[in-house]
Length: 215
Image (cartoon, rainbow, N blue to C red; front, side):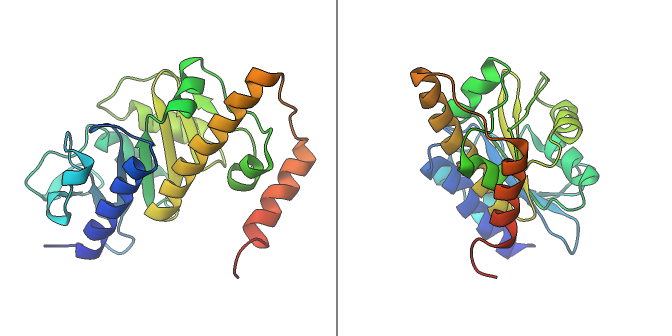
């Protein structure tokens, strides 16, 4: 079995989506690109998250050809691959329908930069891209065209896509999207949230990237 370590990691990452309340039943998925071979490992379509195993993961090339795996790949595979082909810096892609973030997507509303945590992780408002049908490259095209410098984007009437240098980074972004979306929604019930200035957004993001944590 090829790419065993990535397959094992991907089981953990997909199940982390369910454990963090970002997906239900079989909806949503994560994929990881192997930087050495360029091959992509992705969740199989329609399989319950607790039932995922390293063996059930599907390996495809960047053109969508199945290289290894007995199951059909996620219905979002074409969009994942489109993102990988156009973003050499991305090795992890996640898609969820997490409740609060998807509520913003349902009304075609970006998540505004009203929380320091949002500025830290995303460097500005989380954009909301246009509408596209599932199954082809269209969603991937919207992600590439409209995500900007953010690691996350909402898709109108659909859900959330996040990207990262690693699969773990993409999952972290998905967790953070839902966390800030919930808090922003709650703040909207109290009144009009106060947006943080562009200058302070940049300062917060720079500090988070270059100072926060261990270096």
